[in-house]
Length: 399
Image (cartoon, rainbow, N blue to C red; front, top):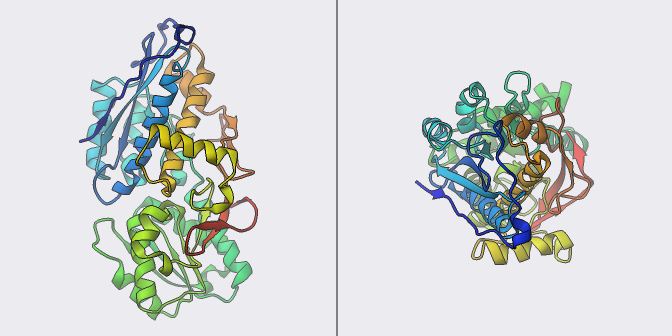
């Protein structure tokens, strides 16, 4: 089990102005510290995402070096759940009942977070910026203490569907999706995006489980159904498998989409073989570090410098490190807006009162929330792999 609990010494005396702890402040809040928790798959089938937790922690270390937030340092307890929902439940209970964290931050995974959401809401603990695009994590009516961060899978699926209608209205579509709420969300979005044409255009579907050794048989079956467009959803490991198998059997769909959740060049494309992924399409909301157009972009250059200083040795081609950086920035802004009131109610209130640009988001995309809007990011850009990196085409669009 990995436990990240780095502390950093506060900076200058001027930066050490202490805000007294208030009676209404959440557990985990002292005069000098904000303690919060996270579950992350540092092991198991989704372990490639583990760098998100490490990148976020590195960002908080930088904030602590600068004096923290209103005199308080940030301390994150990040625990390895192996992408196993029962383990996530166990560790979430520990974080809330034993470690007494103020809130949960960026817990990763649809099935894992879904397993804890009811419990967390019953305890009225903020579950902030969940690392999942499942539409259910914006259900403020039934789960007002849980909020996602990235564009929803349904939005993303609709974007691919509408592009298909424009570019290949006579397509025969196959969809291979992860057999859980995330996969079903993607499927629904794509089907909804096709509208009345869905029943005619979708000729085959298949699912897989994250415990499956391969998706080879599913790829063969989908090809044999005559599909000429493929939409593959899932974590990097399985998207990479699908890319490799389709190439190896000589199947080249005229449109081949993979979900943004498994599009990292470092953990999906390189294991498959970059030559096998040429012309594959995904959608993006952050500046992908493999996109050469950002080489002189100030935001990108600042991110590279930050990586070199605070997360040295990490893979600068892995978009998950951008993700961790951006979500950490979102949390820092939320806590700054809280001022001296770090009650759970105010933390949740500030998380749902955001309007901010982030230097590593794609142009035209902002983080925006409101009391009735639990979907911080709502736009994406289509990008295509050219053998080296993801290159965008078109403007930011909504689903």
